[in-house]
Amino acid sequence: MTNRSRCAFQIALLGCALAAVCASGCASMRRQKISTKSMAACRQMSRDGVAAMELGQWDQAQELLTDAVQTSPTDLDARRHLAEVLWQQGKHRDAVVQLEAAVRIDPRHAPTVVRSGEMLLGIGSIDRALVRAEEAIALDSSLAGAWALRGRIFRKQDKPERALADMQQALRYSPNMTNALLEVAEIQFSLKRPQRSLTAIHYLLDVYAPGEEPQKVLWLEGLVYGALERRQDAVESLYAASLRGQPSAELFYDLATAQNAAAQPAAASSSLRQALALDAGHKASQVLLAQLQGTTSPGLGNVIRR
Figure 1 (cartoon, rainbow, N blue to C red):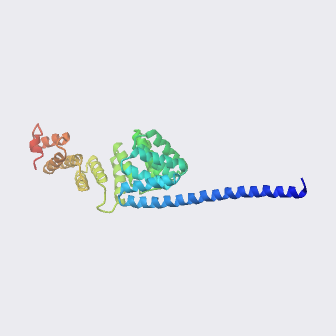
Figure 2 (tube, helix red, strand yellow):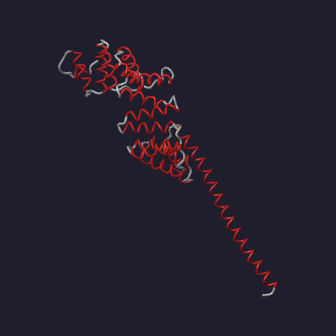
Figure 3 (tube, rainbow, N blue to C red):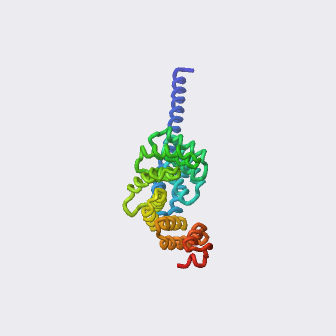
């Protein structure tokens, strides 16, 4: 081969190589462009889905967020939001699937790991929830939600002292965490430590503005006052609880019990009739009303008549 032929051959090879590189680069740029468009579309649909969530438009939110996930399957926020919508709609197992996928996308995002554990606990998968709680604590030992999750799991496992320790650890990092304060109060009450329970309740009530205290907290406060034999305080707390939201037969019964203990039989009878108006078969209310009326039979025909 002459020098001129050899040179021409080398130039031809170089041209082929450059063409291959250019073709590869163009394909990469096209893929990047498509990926960028997909991510932008996903984020817009995700924002629209969150807006629908805030308006309570759950079906529309699910449709938008499902499209967002399909457009960009590795988008962590889209999957998290979709899981919350599904959970709100009662599609709990579908929600768990989305959160588990989110954890696989970013296994070091501790809040996602915690929420996955909470949902697993919600469907009764206690062992898997415990794994998630401990993973989250290992990732971020200052994350209050991780300690609170493990505390709830221990409570489900009938380990109240361990549950209490974890809830107190959660409160160390988030002192106004309302669900942890309520759990502490409930656990202390179950362990027959009413004074400690009351301390937690009062701290919890201070978190809320006057008039916004939840029914459940006021109800527990009334039961704790009853255990401490502070009878009038018990009546007042339970009565306040009955004015918060929709009362139940059980709440009216507890109010009647407190009123009876505070020597208020007429008020107790009235509360029992309200309990039986809600649930005519509420046995404990039937029995107590019969006792207050001095009869041996509740006489349902008279019980629910006001």
